[in-house]
Amino acid sequence: MDLPISPGLLISLIIVVIAVLIISKGLIIIRQSEVMVVERLGSFHRVLESGINIIIPFIEQPRAITMLRYRKMGEDYTAITTDETRIDRRETVMDFPGQPVVTTDNVTVRINGALYYQIIDPKRAVYEVENMSQAVEVLAKTTLRSVVGKMDKLFESRAEVNNEIQAAMEEPASKWGVKISRVEVQDIAMPEEVETAMRLQMAAERKRRATVTEAEGEKSA
Image 1: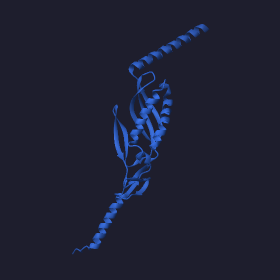
Image 2 (image 1 turned 90 degrees about the vertical axis):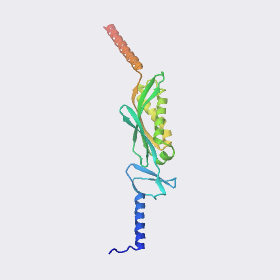
Image 3 (image 1 turned 180 degrees about the vertical axis):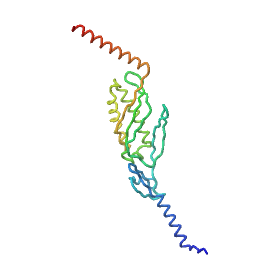
């Protein structure tokens, strides 16, 4: 014979179930090197660090950050944009596609670069700029064009180009809570006719040096 459940016990069970659901929804575990920006009723409230954290469901909500990443598909790059509530504070590399750059002698070259950056202030990265990673990428591209456009000897000045780009990006990136670790110019592609002219020039220069050395040897003899 089944025993009837009293109304008081039924209400207690319902309260317990609701409490368990609220606790499970409000319990958030943040992994090492990650943080989460939390808003309370639409306004910034706090930043959750790694470990076990509790938020108030329906009142406190994580604020997502928009991240732009490139994935190489064969010879081309595909841009992927995602909204992430967990912000990775580790150093991140952005390998953006080759950019056309005009040098001082009006030669258009394509430069492929890699940018290493790190989010040091999650609150600024979320609220000070709409799309932090895209803003960093556009800043890197415009700075690259500006710096390379002033260089006379591009191939001999890669280290100088890297340092100048990093120095120029540090101040604006810091306003977004981002630290620029380093910038690397990976590859420089020139038009075929320019490469041919450079090879001919180098061959002529080597031949001239050989002729001068041979003449000096004969004179000494």
